Amino acid sequence: MTKIVVDLSSLRQTTWREYLKRFLVGGTITAIVGIIARKFGPGIGGLFLAFPAIFPASATLIEKHELEKKRQAGVNGVLRSREVAAVDAAGAAMGSIGLVAFALTLYKMLPLYPAWLGLSAAVLIWIAVSALLWKIRDVL
Amino acid sequence: MWKELLFRFLIGGTLVSVFAIIGDLFKPKSFAGLFGAAPSVALATLGLAIVRDGPSYAAIEARSMIAGAVAFFVYAYCVSWLMMRHKVRALVATSVCMLMWVVVAFGLWFIWLARA
Image (cartoon, rainbow over all chains, first blue to last red; front, side, top):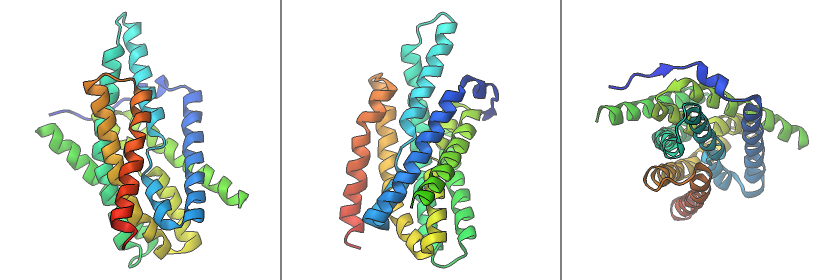
């Protein structure tokens, strides 16, 4: 069974420029989603709440970091770096099932319960469903 | 209008960064990848929609988000498959599969939500 580890050293691998890039991409996408919802209504705007905006930047970053690590070790890590990014994407696929549960929770709860309760429940359900799926996949 | 956009930008940028940093912290990568599908943009947008337009408006957005999230699953699976099986570069795989997201999200919207 795979153990989940918190590795603080991975934070040092990311440069301030890369952190800034994520912030700018995330902020821009959120602003654009707001404009789409205003222009085309909440029905179309809602689709973009699960748009994989930041995903290309993250996957490229993972590939780059793994490649640098392998090169420092004197190995050509092109294939390995792509495999690592692929594994991360497989994790995101499981997380996206959690995202379906997140959206469904809010759709059902927002008209009936206080907003803070709906948002809190949705975040907890997202992490619970995602982690559970990850665990099942790990055991199998 | 500009004030609201700037506010959205700051909230969205912050939430995306926070979830990305949390994802960076975890190992193995398959677990860290869960945070690649974190509801960061959704939390920022829905939070502001609740305050500005009310919970019913936000609930409509959340209903459409279900279709977007199914499309995200297809997208992430497609990226993973292309990179693992065909060893395609991350930038190429994530860009090509974007088309899948558009087709699945809008396909579901037309089939399921536009008629509801």
